[in-house]
Length: 143
Image 1 (spheres, rainbow, N blue to C red):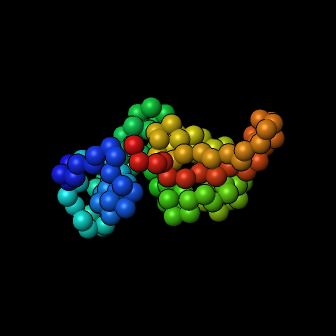
Image 2: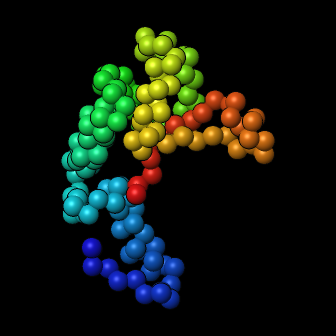
């Protein structure tokens, strides 16, 4: 979309100089073609927030699950997006947000279902050991 044609056998230096910056820009814009020419980070963030996150949180999740605590969903999204890879202790988060543990777990599952956040588990050969460890949540990668 930016008019760069990369040939199959171009050298690495040419790739790094021309294609890599365009690829990084693509990632910054989460792959949305409608904002390909936008440059202001604040406008890009607002677009993604309003077009994707808000739509999932305000429409899709309530329709699918009947979840109505938008304040809690927003707090959880902010927590994950501002601290990617944070070890997620449901008990301490429930306490800090004045909600019960089950509610926090349910809302995390709603956000995972809506592809708003992604779960990372510790790698262990034993699945049972991995499942007992505290989880990390991250914003989803660009599509």
